Length: 247
Ligand SMILES: [Fe+2]
Ligand SMILES: [Fe+2]
Image (cartoon, rainbow, N blue to C red; front, side, top):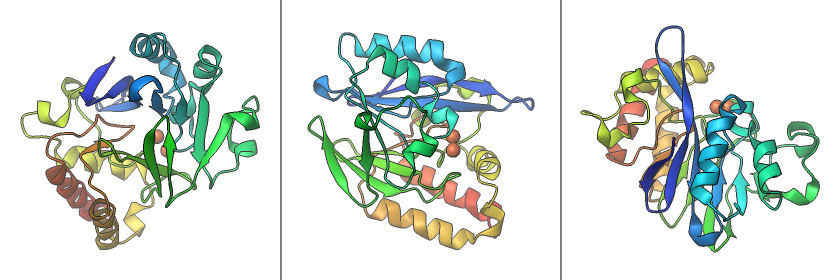
């Protein structure tokens, strides 16, 4: 399903319902970027049909310039082959901290790959994108991307949340009281199994540093909908959830 988030940012992707009835989203984000679209993560292969249909509808005649991969797990890279077949000219931007010949599919050619270096920024189709090491990750080398123009932070697995079916595709400002801390707790507890072994104070302090260093206006998590309403309240609630999970 295509949802317009803000500015030229769109959200695609589907969700899955667990045995307990709680749902988990697997989103893909697109910045249309005036003729050189930027795609953030490729989505799950199990949602290939709707994602490719939505991408073609959203992009029309314009080929994507770059596909940014936060990390190489299948829910984030599952449609690389379909995207590449449809638009062979698209380049993949991956973290400099991963080994492409090990972690990328064999058919990805060296000339299709560009590296994003944590702590640096680059221009892609006149759009400045900066890279940072992901604080919360389930795979080494995961990086986050920040679009300086619109203040969107693409956070891969971090800042996701589980939700009841009624909240599928709803942004935080479309829910009566935003995203509850409990939804964030349910997700982070299962997504990051190491959290009970780390200091909640440190995780919260690290998260605060991320948001102090850049003017984030929208958070774009893969496993949740874009957060575009009350960012500060959302971050406070995620921190609260962390206190409940961590030491
Ligand atoms: Fe992951
Ligand atoms: Fe993931």
